[in-house]
Image 1 (cartoon, rainbow, N blue to C red):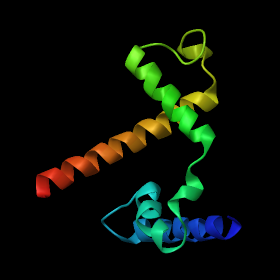
Image 2 (cartoon, rainbow, N blue to C red):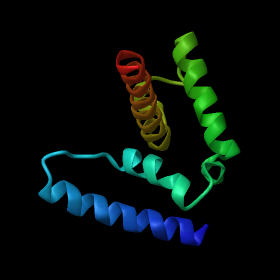
Image 3 (cartoon, rainbow, N blue to C red):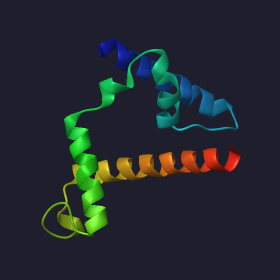
Image 4 (tube, rainbow, N blue to C red):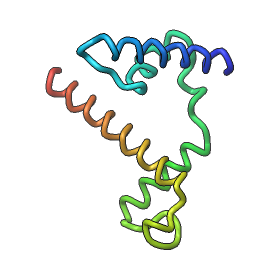
Length: 104
C-alpha cells in the first residue's frame, strides 16, 4: 500500500501542476478514479470503517435523524468532514450517471 499512496502523491502533484496551467480543471477524486486501475486494485480502498460510515450517512439522511446525540453543533468534526466527502462523491457519481444517460 505504501507504493499505492506514493503514486497517489505523484498524481496529486501532477494534478496541481495541470490545474495551474490549464483552463480545464480536475478534482483529485476524478484523477484518482481514472488512473487507479492502472496501478492498483480499487478494492484496496474499501474498508469496513468506510462502509459503516456510508451506511450511517444513508440511514441518517433517509430517516432524517442525527448520527449522534444532539444538534449540529454537537456532532463530531470528523463526522461532519466525512459527511462532506460522502456527499461530494455521491453527487459526483450521480452526475456521471446522468451524463452517461444523456450522452448514451
